[in-house]
Image (cartoon, rainbow, N blue to C red; front, side, top):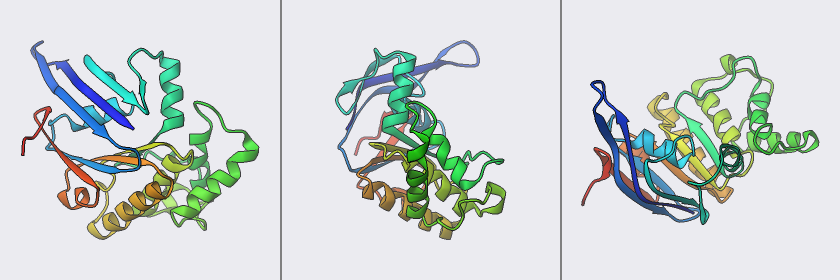
Length: 224
């Protein structure tokens, strides 16, 4: 499903020097599996997730999603691929405060290739029901707990039934008990929809819940 080969990425440092963030990173993740990327702050894991999510591009190397090379695609084509193939879950939820749970999930159906209005309602309600929030559709984020807000974010990520779910520290803003509930729900719901799941985390306990754990150290995979 996801194949990276020889990915390199660098940025300008504070003194104008080039700082290597990713150094010859290759990765192959099979469809329907789950993987966690562990690493300290500054290891390059967030940059790698941004490349996987088509939010950034590498300096060199190749990236294929479901067999399609993405490096030559236009911005419009990348946005379309992102909206149809990828779902995102973030640490800080990124829910719109003035919208209800239903409306926040619906936003995922209004971009890229918009879903007709007559189809949206059933998709949104099904997604919210899957994360146990069928009775919270009209609640706004301030009326929900942190765990409930993250469940809305998961419903939003899954509403299009994406091929890949990318999660950036999905339990980082939650307490231990809520984290356990949310990570179980995320992995179970994604697997039920046949999605490949890749998450970045600093928590080894969370990483142990996935099929595969990878360690990123100073922009390269740690050697066993």
